[in-house]
Image (cartoon, rainbow, N blue to C red; front, top):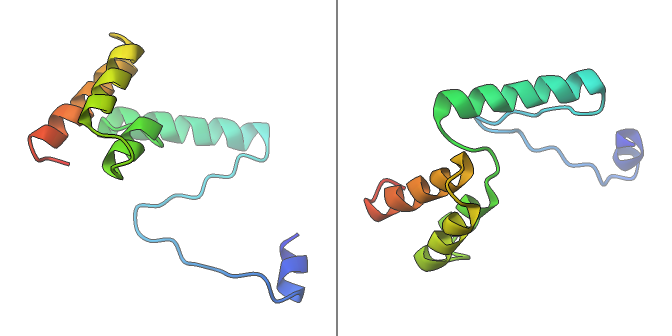
Length: 95
């Protein structure tokens, strides 16, 4: 596929910056490896990868009240607690 785009002059390449990882999930083994990578990263960093609510909040697509509501809807599970922590950190100016 890439060769076809290259031949048509439609292929562009953009280097990825520091801290970005490309994870191939095209096979069962690579999907498992990617999953374990994300799990390890989340556990060690205390952050969620691709948390849609966090992204929306950081980009001001939703406000603090909406973030609070989403966190409450998630309940007292780990994910809901994470959303509350993101909100609290933002209120304390750590975001």
